Length: 466
Image (tube, rainbow, N blue to C red; front, side):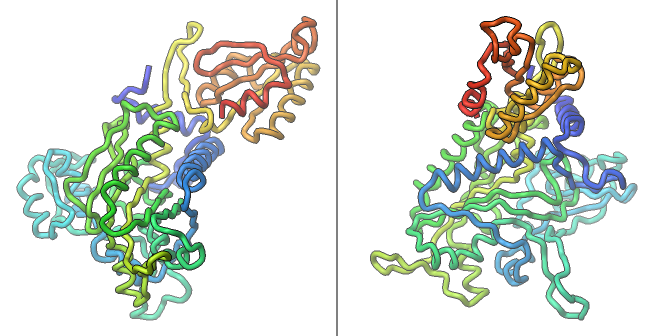
């Protein structure tokens, strides 16, 4: 049985906390809204997702480069990108309990679309016409303040910013700006031929009015972005190929196709010529997993205008100069993490018992295999099991040891964290049955089937699966 919509999020949040995937940030002090910590198993899954994404977007593609840009940027960069003036959400406050709401999302929930390009007066006119249909989620009141645009950039201090009139600095509202700022450096040092791509996984911060849905909308998160630099007006074919490429990648990491869909934006953000989302069917319904945007020449043109630096690309073959157009993919790693967990979550009946199992793709699983002795109170079994564990761990780092409780409980724990294989050392391993000497029991997570395998074959078997 797959995840039920009605209580799906509760089950995911509970599993993530119980099994060391995700913890509330600063929990001992009561937490901090929209901030989460990835626990020991969560960080392994997250790193596996990053590796799979990097492999697909840097190593597997020709003329694609990786980047890790610093978080702080000259404040003028955010002015050029449009974030200081256009990166905002309309906010209103309940007059009864002071709970804040995003007006555009509240309107969207009742089937009314608020265009991002609307002025405050236009948004308020729309809000006023539908106030009676919008209730405060906390107290149920319909009495809200006037909507005001709330900029999402997070201000910070860098050095001594105590004097009046000094420009503020910002934490990145999106990670991709670093790629545009380093575009010229990459062209000068790598001499790439267009089309070429740049990939980055970087931190982003947003003053979200109402963080919600666990990892889906947070105030601190990581973004995985690619920017494909192409010749002007050669965007149509490349854009379609990019959408297909991203769709196939989600399938390659085990996400079920019936839980994905592509949706075109009706209202475009200020920088986009066209925009599509890969949406995933989260427990609350289909919602954005990754954005695929045709940004035309907006970004480089803006940064050239504000910086005064020539960002034209010179074709090495014919000397032609032009500002490249950009096709972008942008995805929150937390959203991907949540989608992968939700997609892998199953409840089934195995051996007459109901179990929870994460059917993660083996290459994503935080633990590839668990090694344990059949009985923990038999020194000879424990010693041999430790030998097998240590030998495997030298070749495959994500190998776990577990001798806590009986073997059935160990299996259930490993099922819940998505471990594909459980390896058990028993008396046959030690030679009680001569023909089974130096063999172990390998249990498959999904089917529960157990097979005998030679210890010498374990590493190559696991590697072939991951």
